[in-house]
Image 1 (cartoon, rainbow, N blue to C red):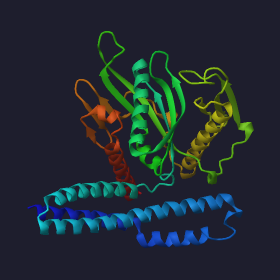
Image 2: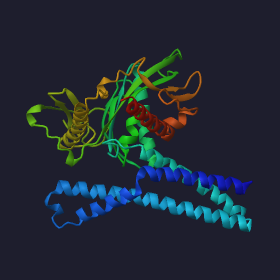
Image 3: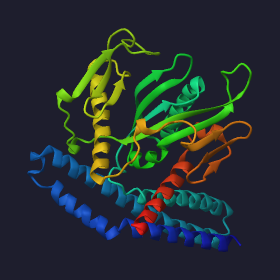
Image 4: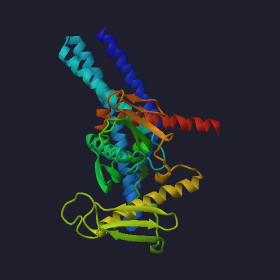
Length: 374
């Protein structure tokens, strides 16, 4: 029976891997690496630093993609040999190790399958995430802080680097808003599925009568600007205000006017930064996020698409995309994909992969339907 189980499992793994290869276009990937390697080896490459950066970045990304695919193929071969030898010798310990390895490969292939669906213009980019408290008073501010911790814990577990750029604290508890940067490949493609309104239902810790409360928070995700994007912002289009940072902090925080509020006059987009120690650092961070938002806005205008940006999400009734219910039952459910988890504590501690993967697959299917209807 174990032999049949392994045979079917390995066959399923190879079938899934073949599907990934088909989408990945291995011959095209190798050809692209050869072309980019020739460009990277050109003696005059760095005469244009922006082009050089783009070429070397693309080459590094495609080489890493090819290495992942080749390592996975070798691992499948090794698993098959391991199972054959263990079954011939009746080695139960090795068979148990093979079970663990098969599970690891299933997870790796599933991850690659999701990556093949991230083919948008900016999906491979790093991301800037902003969380804002919505309707619900102090409970909403507390919920915003819970969501910030959730995403930072998810990134920590994945080994991704993050940097909190701005936090605006509410008066009683929690956050009015927070912005952080996620520095990881395909950060925007993955986390963009999290954009929208999140709803929390629980017994409020801030209500003396112990009533069940509903609160909301809005999540915005934008791709991080790159030097090659050429988003020029004339000084005449910027209004820059400086003020004293608020909330907990270390040396220099709360003692000097280091916080920066940057307003883009033509669009009305406002970005605030206060978590760096110096005004110059906060100004640079604010400009980077503003450029990222203008990049996304420009793309939307060029494609004539009406997608919602951060300020367009109402964060109130009728607008939610995910519900976190702590009372009268325990469940987190995505209202678009119907994916759900029965352990909210684990989700708030960063167990988001199931929601993100389901969301990426749902978005890909939506795009396929749109193409058929067009």
